[in-house]
Image (tube, rainbow, N blue to C red; front, side, top):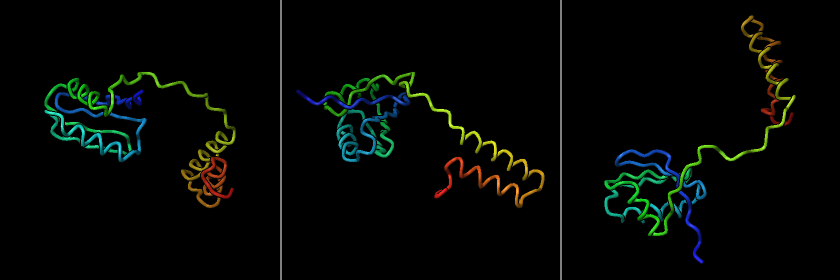
Length: 139
């Protein structure tokens, strides 16, 4: 049985220009080079720019995008799918009291700065806030 095709989501499309994202192949430079080569052979495709790091490609074309998508599917490069309007559910973030205290200390530090009390109150509060927020190493 053939391996399923990667799914490309249409990020932006207008006549003659479309940006697609293939999130499942993000970072795969060999895959995106093959896609660029394969799409360049499709009649009416003028230019293909790939960005493996972001998993996206920009296609400049003449024919409608549907024809380009059909050619990509026929060449077994990718299949164009619908972008989900609602992101998949994620676990609820846990309440982090250290972050809340850190934000409070940062706010107090900014207030001390506006009062002209830079040393030591503002710097000390900023230091504590950074440690609580996990921004400082070794704390």
